[in-house]
Length: 292
Image 1 (cartoon, rainbow, N blue to C red):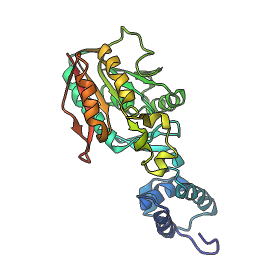
Image 2: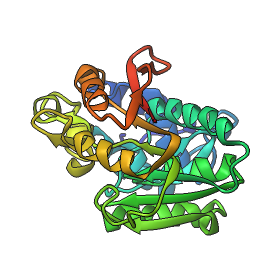
Image 3: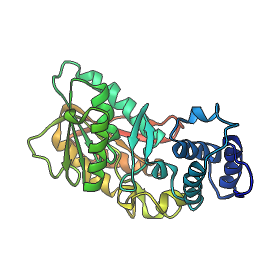
Image 4: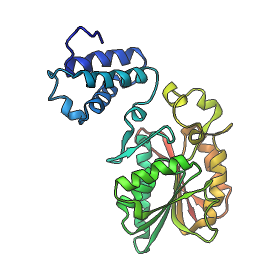
C-alpha cells in the first residue's frame, strides 16, 4: 500500500483482495472485508456505504498489520478474535479450533433428537471436547429445559468457552468441567444426549491440511493419533456407560474414517449404531448411536 496515494475504503478492499489472492487465500475478498471491518470497528455491511471514504492513518495501520499476518497464514478468526456460528458470535483464540460450518449440522441433529425427550425435565446434555463452547452454548440457547455439561481437557479452551457463555448470557445454564473426555465426571452421572466434535485427524492427514490450519490451530484438538480414531475409540465406551436407555451419542467425524468409526460403534453391545449422516456439503460427517 504505497503511502503517497489516497486510499479509500473501496480501493483498500480491491488492493487487499488481489494481494491476499496472490498469497494463497481461498476467500481473499471475504478476508479483506472482515479485517477492514475489524480495523474500522464496524460491520462488514457498513463498508459498502463507505467505499468513497478515505481511510484514516489509524485504520490503515491496524488493517496493514492484520493483512500482513493473514498473508503469512494466520487465520482471520484469530486476527479478529471472533467467528460466527449458528447465528451467534463466538470469541476464539489459538487455544481453540475455529468453528466450522459443517459442525452446524451436528447442532441441527442434536436439536432434532432432543425432541424425542420432550417429556424429560431436565433434559441432560453433555458436550465432550467443548473447545470454544459452541455445541454446549447452542444447546443452552435452543433447549431451555436442558441441563448442559461441557468438558474439555484444555483449561485454556474452557476459559474461552466460559467467556462465550458469559457474553451470551448463558453461563448459569452450563456446567464447565476440566476433564479428559468423560473421565472427570462421576460414574453415576447420566445423559440423554452426548455430543462431541473430538480430534479425528490422523497424523498422515494432518500433514496435508492447509497451512493456516496446520500451523495455527491447536494440534491437540485436531489430531487423534496415527489412525484418527484413537480419541473416538476411548470416547465410545465412556459414553455408552453414561447414556440413559434410549439416549443418543453424536460424533463429528472425518469422511476418511467413517468405516473405522462405524466398526467402533458396532463393537459396543450397549449401543445400536444409527445411519451415518452427511453434512451440507454432502460429505460423511456425523456418526450416531443409541443406547439400548
